[in-house]
Amino acid sequence: MNLDQILFERSSGNIGPNVFARLQTTKLLSSFRPAPRFRFDGGERAVGGNAGEGSSSIAGARAAGDGGEQTDSRPLSLWAHQAGVTALALERFDGRILISGGSEAAIKLWDLEQCSNPASSHTHQPVAQIPRAADNEPSASGHRYGITHLSFYPFDSAAFLSCSYDQTLKLWSTEAARVSGSFNLGAKVYTHAISPIASHLLVACGTQHPAVRLVDLRSSSAVQSLLPPGQVGGSAGATLAVAWSPRHEHVLATGAVDGGVRIWDVRRASGLVGLLDQEDSLGILHPGRARGAEGGVGGVGELHGRGVRLSARAHTGPVNGLTWTDDGAHIISAGHDCRIRVWDAATGANTLASFGPNIRNSQLARLTMFVSPTGLTPPNKELLFFPNESEILVMDLHEGSIITRLRGMGPAVAAVRALRGGERTIKNRLTSVVWRGAGGGGSSSGVVMGGTNAPGGLYTSHLDGQIRAWLPQLEGLDEEAEDESREEVAEVRAKKRKVLDDAFRSLMGKQITFT
Image (cartoon, rainbow, N blue to C red; front, top):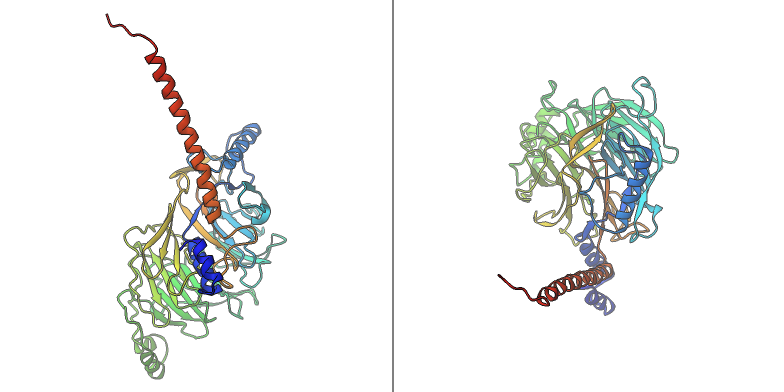
């Protein structure tokens, strides 16, 4: 159904406003395309280049960006973080402030509404920067090693959180770009999460240690450690993914190196209430839970009483991706076994959704995938946006079919600035992806998508130092672009025809004699 038909059905009353909005937003969700006209310049210059070379290369990059062509195969002269971008976060209220973290431990803040017209080219400049702390200044406010994860405070964009390989979690003031609190967890911090609905201010941190650490922002201390039963020796390995339930404020899901996805109730002394089992497609029935609650005595015995196997595993490899749908009905996990699994959150059943053999996931780092916000698509038609190392796969969440592939991630191998000076060569890959909508980063306030200056958007970070933008294609703009491209193609063909005609006439106009 095209736009004219949808408008006619809407005006005639055959479809309501919510259905009309879902039809449109579903089309937009499957129409994302690269937007190379948006660049992010962190102010860094090429290693060994003089000021003149840097200035001329920037001018050339902007000129290329004005042409609207994807030119990621050429050498890039603008970087958001020249050492590589490792983390992104976008505030959920206006979808305006974007935060990036780099391998060099710096954090930069960007205003996405610096450009009022999404159809024109623009090079974003950071509105604030937090530099790396020097090695001889351990008490400095910045991080000393690479940033692993960034997130905004869920109730107010005036604060955000960061964690790093330097074993710290930090709380920042967004407006002042100044640290408000720092927590040393004694192990490398891979990820963190704060509940989007809870009255408590607990931050769950996944670290190199098998225990999940809970940091209370009110008391400014680590108040609790969640350690699986029987894992005192640390056989579960590091925790790479954590995600709070969007419906139950005390329920937390975690993914570990041993392939386990564990469900916790942080109010309980034992904590662990379940494990997701890839071999279980039925789930735990409520009567079984009731019997376990009556006959169990807590800990391992209670888990056995409710039919939970302590040996259950969600994946056969480390689990580094974990997220919930907005309504809390499903949990999505991703592991190094190159599998994505969708779980019924109420019963823990594996829904057996198959995403095929195209999944790539091999990095021992947090993987940021997300599901399209509730309300943008019809029920049970949500889309999963999955960072597939060198592309974004947009897939049907419940059927696993690929809707579209977003490609154009830059060179496969890139030279980036080394921490100690000079350059090093790395394999380029996508490190983080964030959703921009009217409801921001992963949560929806209705059937609307987009900020004040765009119909929606995705922003991705990459190890080649770039932040790339992806925008949905509007029908009117598509038609105009097609008309322009047709005119250009016709003009090129006319020129080629003229050249061939001139060559033919020049040959035919001369008498050629063979002797």
